[in-house]
Figure 1 (spheres, rainbow, N blue to C red):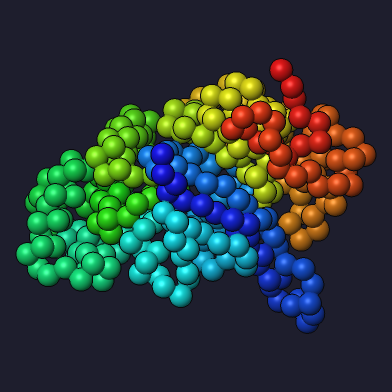
Figure 2 (cartoon, rainbow, N blue to C red):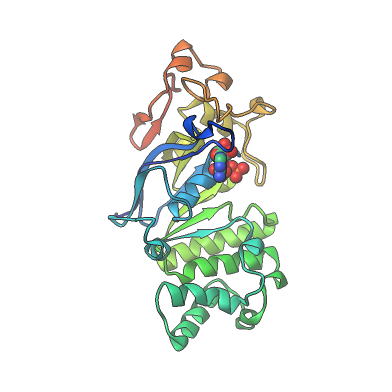
Length: 319
Ligand SMILES: Nc1ncnc2c1ncn2[C@@H]1O[C@H](COP(=O)(O)OP(=O)(O)OP(=O)(O)O)[C@@H](O)[C@H]1O
């Protein structure tokens, strides 16, 4: 197995908006230092509630947002925000809302041509051949190429979004809630297509979702984010069947149902801590049935629980 992606201490702090002395006060730590690696061909699921930092994390991974610290390496080479073309060739983003992510004034052909021209310097004939090949691989008819994004259904538009990402010939796709906006029947088609494309093109996936059932179905490993930090990472079956972190257990205990938002029943109505005034210890302590004084004063570090499974908890569950 070769390593596709390595993320080391990647973090993002947004400065505090407005106010006279805003710049001098600590900002919002949207992503605390995150480190992990992903093997080629693997699907890493990333789960977390709204506001846990998923989008910020994804945007850093594809070079759309400069990190505050840390680094990203793909196939052993470090990516630099000053070189967006290299980012684009290695890692691409598939958006949740396919139609609004596509430029409404451009035909599908123009949309797909851009990465071939800008990233790969391809001439006309080569571009046409490559576009035909990619379009076929996402099961869309060639006559669709000369239409505009609003002419497509959600499922078709998402296949166009995937085609656009593939046109850059990347090694990794960051799929940000790729099926959340689609009907359940269409979700299955798009998930099957993604599985086949991964094999055909030798891709690696980071699959972000709030939908645990979908994440469990598609992931080899799963990373659980809470309040901008990784609280647990491990094999998908272990994460859902033998979670170590109480937060993961709360999520896993609420039996997965396709399409249901990520929130454990016990937590309905409760909120994430205030990002402008984070608690001193474990961010989950206020919601955790196992919390002690230690949890309220000292932030737990991510540590190995067993082979391939790490959790950031002072009082993890044991078998
Ligand atoms: N540009 C910004 N400026 C200041 N704070 C921001 C900015 N973008 C995000 N944040 C804050 O960072 C934290 C993480 O936000 P982020 O959008 O990454 O979460 P998320 O898990 O993707 O949520 P959702 O699923 O709702 O999109 C939140 O507290 C958010 O308010």
